[in-house]
Image (cartoon, rainbow over all chains, first blue to last red; front, side, top):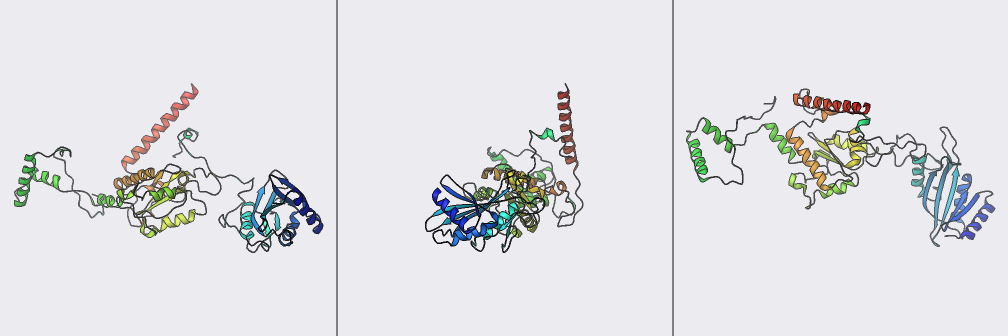
Length: 176
Length: 252
């Protein structure tokens, strides 16, 4: 776990290599996080993966969140782990909603972390975030012909009212 | 006697009440029965004496009843678990609950050999076509039990991914409530299904789901019996009366 000064050092080095790649950092509950520019997320991850002294070679998780009505709306989160030092680092990329039928896009990191293949398909399946350069981007858990992105906050919850004896009076003559 | 039935139907008035089981038969009864059996063999028995002897010693039934009795007491459930209810379903074959007492311990691994599908858990919309296919692969006659709240109504999974009640896409004969139901509850549901099979060889789901004409054997259209018509209209009248009463009560 890089401590707060260590996190700032990483952010400085990244901003030196890639201008404007780290937008902010924060350090809470002993967890370090970098907020990065979504257009440079692949460069950032590659630097963290390859640079001697960093070597975050393990992607523990890749997930997304919908912050509606917050802006930017979507967040793609990468949980990195450095196995030799057992240090964890969180990388966040905030994606605005393009609106309409267009889907937000971000670079795929499958070439760095093969495990991201399934993770990115899951994020695409539930949030409709397109990963550019993914080898096989299609739904992974929902049926292939499913319409919509069910974990977005504006997606209807689903389900239907169940008829019990106590609410039977609300739907009289349900048997007809 | 049903049309097309090959069995033999014997209808006879009961001549006397049989002695209760806990009451030992009187010695003279036993002697009288011995004498009657001897007379029967000699051909001397006729009239009410003959009737009485047959009543006491011959099991008379119709072919349909015998068939459905056999079906109900030798069920072959499909080995098919959907979710956590499957754990409870598995335990009904253990010695502790022992559904072998009711003749359904033989879980078949192939739907072709099974005649009971226990929907043990939530059915997601991705699983629904698979479940329907397994049900379609089972041979007639076949039955289905929706076990637990999820497969009956969606249960706690009131969301985008789960079918809100398995009877949206397949016929279900018995719904067992619970989350999950205890094995005893499932056995109780199974006994209800057995009674349904014995009492009425046609489970009635074709009528409920408007699926008349999908039978695998040729037979005429199924019309509701007079009793059923009477029961439906009586239930409706009762409900209407209750509704009218509650409205009147609100107005006052």
